Length: 342
Ligand code: 13P
Image 1 (cartoon, rainbow, N blue to C red):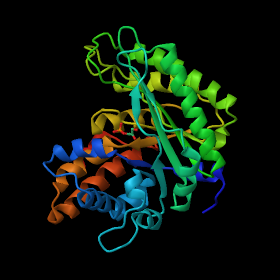
Image 2 (cartoon, helix red, strand yellow; image 1 turned 60 degrees about the vertical axis):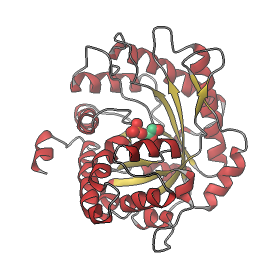
Image 3 (spheres, protein in one colour; image 1 turned 60 degrees about the horizontal axis):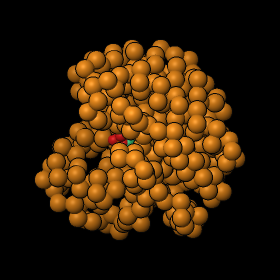
Image 4 (cartoon, rainbow, N blue to C red; image 1 turned 90 degrees about the horizontal axis):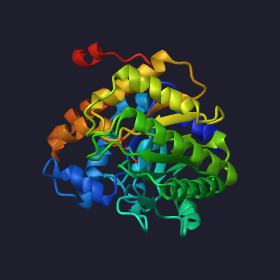
């Protein structure tokens, strides 16, 4: 494959395909395993992820790239094959989560800033050598009565821009992920509040990327969709989410960005698919619009797997189904009947 950043970015958002986010940190994957009563050991994490990467139908047809946690980038499958080689053999690009997590932002009670810039240049060189051709850095922005603050928006956008510039210097495509969270207890966290905050975060983000000299043709944006908060009593329809998300992105994301790959953020599997499909079916857009889902792509497979080798085939089928549904959504061709047919 070409090593140009622009070509890697285009491959990451190839027609009808999207990104599998399998980069849960050790703490997050433990939570996922707790839900199926499986202990989070290094071998179990390996077995689970190897099961996903060996799911040929899903990987070859619908997955353009996989985001890994550092442990997985250097891990070998049960038979000694590096997991990275399984991903490459399926025609997908290996990627790596490089941030060190969101830490409390001084001076506020709920807000966070993502850390991990110290030593990042050296780590990126090591990751490139191990085969990673794209990276991810996630910032989180929390909506409450009195947040986000400008301090939080600015600090996170600045860190993301510095990260993105370092990635490009290392020959790695940055996924820029400023996530406006949908969780929280705020009943007044409406879809319009989400729009306003996301627009602010993205306007600030692209100004920072410009200042840092980031080549927009060699990056991928990973935003949240414009949805109401989980505790909001008034949830938006699929059409409203699609309309508001596309409108927000059109007013903030330059056309030179090749692709936008959404996070699922706690949406149900089917809604995450329905929203993406509606956007692609209803609107003309200058960028590719696809998925970079973690939970919404893995939940069914995790449940089917249950940590048992005899369930591997069933888990792979569950993963293939979800990947196919999202692959169709990436071209606007998904519909509810396809779910029922399966
Ligand atoms: P979810 O789709 O589960 O939100 O995860 C995507 C992701 O990579 C968040 O950084």
